Length: 223
Image (cartoon, rainbow, N blue to C red; front, top):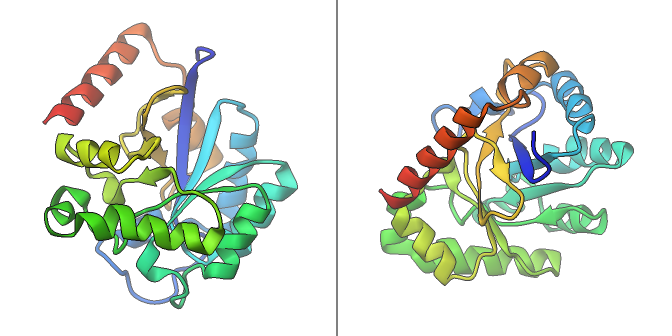
């Protein structure tokens, strides 16, 4: 792994989901607390891992935050603006607790809809109003965004650039480059363990693999 290469690894809910899925497939990305801690300990061994948490679940504060602080780790959190304070989701006090502990907080949009379709009618709500809502809650500028469902195309990227975002995270399951505006991530799923994360996300990439990664990302960004 080169000095400038990162492995972005993202989590969603931690623990046992409380209630039905809010969208199809959501529970696939919930991990038990024991599995989360096992994976987190593995990630802590790799300095080029960057951690993030999507959706703004309450477990971001009740489980993830103390575990990160205990290990001296920092992560990015991407709450959904319209869910702040809703049952099972982080509230404003939780968001302030994250930033007070040194965590970074970005935006995952307003209503957790794919931006490839939602921006056609609700661009300001998704990219600006949601950002302002989170910034007001945290008292910090919001400069990073995570694409809901990892969905993006050239129109989404153009809109994000126009809105002034300095970093955009996706779910492309490929290595990232530290200085890149677009940051692909690997997503931890319900069945993952420290071993599967090592194999699927942290293994070395060949030169051919790196070229293929760049090609795939370029195609996605221009479709």
